[in-house]
Length: 297
Image (tube, rainbow, N blue to C red):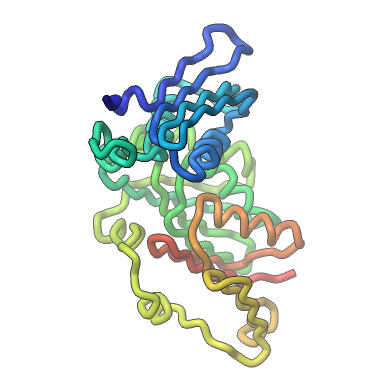
């Protein structure tokens, strides 16, 4: 007999401060399930203090004892969101018994609304790295970003984002975002505004199902130019550096599989090597991201 999806993941919050929260997962087994669940827990800022796994090869029972980081605020809605993400990572019961008692695709919400976050500020080293870190901590997914720097040092940041909590339309959630950005920017922030975009703009930011590579190459074709250094580390990753287009900047073009925190990882690497980005263009195509930046040392 199968189980209802409410019983697939059970979260029993700690009653006393300092004690761990117990999360149990009861579902069909699959290769890499433990890795997927741990990754979700870590993305939510939880520390796994203990774990227990039992499986017969078809069905598994996993228990996690987790503790939230003190710097992250937790409430009932965030625990519910965590539960939903864990359920989505679990295989359906049909994979074990041929009968579907729950299916993760039925639990998936409608496509999230896309919001435009417009931030004007003064430029400084590591600016985009710090901004993407804040948005990641706020659980805002960046669908597309456009950054422009003027000669006087003013930066216009346009982030097209979706909210994993689905609360960015509320005043409280927007104020929380403003405060988090102000804590990082301080006096450098000039203005900030969040607004929901129309369906036409949102359609450009949302993923289209597996676009042919010819379409992607037609937008930004990968081309070999004189003075460009091209490095391909795998069949799915391409990095091109071109010094021929500007006497002051290097064009860096990256094409790779998309993943959460991709823009943060790229900006973190540039910052570690003391490279400043002057212009950013990032395009997202379902599971492929194309990233262009004008960088200078």
